[in-house]
Image (cartoon, rainbow, N blue to C red; front, top):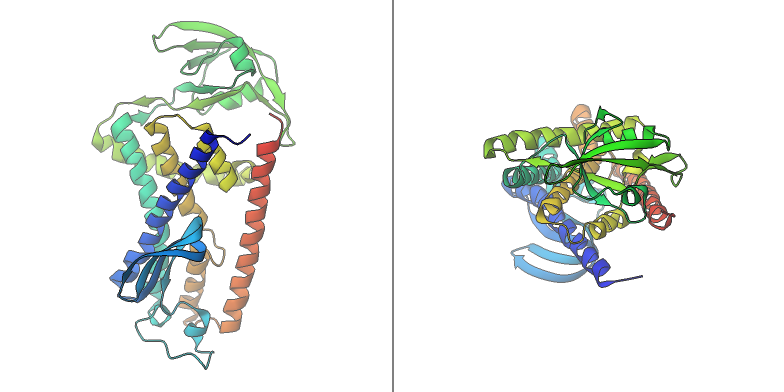
Length: 356
């Protein structure tokens, strides 16, 4: 049933995503400005224009109807302007995008993803500088009512010292539970007072995704240890690199379907985190910004990564693709993106309505 909390979560999601989009597009914008390219519009959102926030010469700052995206429009980016195939159009001035050297266009396109990467990295710097660096301690962040962990007496905040006498970390907790195959497990946990106790838990089988997985109904969370500001920068760099390597591992393991989420899945995450502190929100913002960086670097035409591939091909050939070939490439890219979007949305909905 729809609630005020769900509305607040949806608004929070839209606002955070809009902020991330602004920083991403700001990367494109500042790079284009640095090369003195004529910019026509800085838009947050897609679709019909809702309002023009400000004007600066030929430049408009606008809000558009659909908030899940944005763009920077630079004069001369259109295919017809690039090739000169449209006779009715006035000649493109030499300052426009497609009249510039390949390295300048490459830098402008790359600047957007790099801005997202920088925001994600700085988010982790802020997180670690304020709250400390993450340790390998396995701590229970959330216990789901009615699930085996709750029935057995595990509580949010419990630190898992060992399972069946074997030490566990934040990385090995979930695999260890799954490996139990439903057999009883002896958890040795410690609470905030460092008092230890034994809790016997029996995982239940979950076949929602078409594969049997054993769960106890908890969400682990990181334990943060105080660190200096200098160490925070180093830890943030390590975490940012690990984020990318984990994605590669997920793809290699063929688990992309379970790991990738779209707007519905992200909004659901915001709802699940309702009432949590700033620490969790900063971590989520940083991870979303890194996700935006990685997603935009996919070599699919109409995404930044696809543009970079085409510019690389142009640099090697020393010749631009023809207008008809560019149109075909972008049409294929739009079809791929449409199919990808529908697939992700479908997975989100299935996860949302699947029995828990």
